[in-house]
Image 1 (cartoon, rainbow, N blue to C red):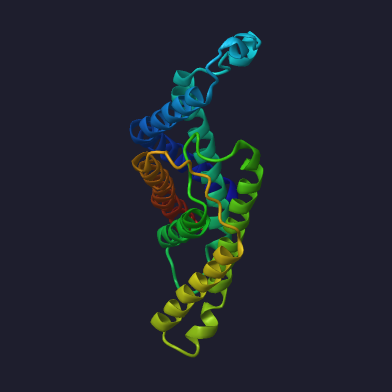
Image 2: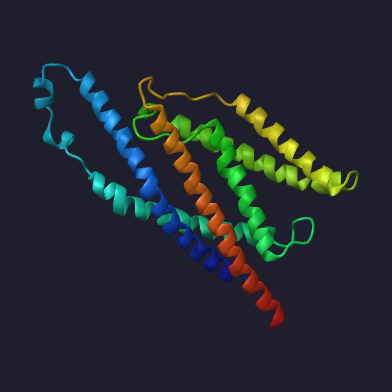
Length: 252
């Protein structure tokens, strides 16, 4: 069963990748171009009036390794498709683990939708509130390792808080109604991630002159692309899993 679910998860990831690529190509790349333009203008303004130093640099240091057209076309397509396909496979494995273990009775489509919704919140949305995505020219290249580490730590905190909060829900259901238990679980998760957000250091390396509109639109597009991926995988894989598991039960 796991193998069949894995294949279906990767197929859902491929569809999600195509949709995400189209969205990023249309709405994301213009913001990246504006950010690169800002970076280029900033570098030109910082350059010394005497160009002899630039003239003396080796030609290989000035050459662009990968053209911008390839980056925004084939490069973006490859990266998005590999990411979404792999994520679809991981999602199917998470579904295989969660199916039948969640409190209450959920059909495969319900489990998939619930897993996608909670995953989007815990794995992307909440960590991004603390460490939002930034376009090129935002952030010191020397701190990228530290910033990446902080981001993954926040993801780990958020995911652990989500899993822990859901795990203890049956304890509250026994003492309160299901609705009140759900509210307690949600508040518990929010409290835990709020503490994690306060403990982790803030990162603000946005240049003062960077266009606020470009930064805002880039981050909105990043959220939109992730939402498209999670929603597509959650709904499409749910339909695949529903058909596969129901068919298996009928032939059992």
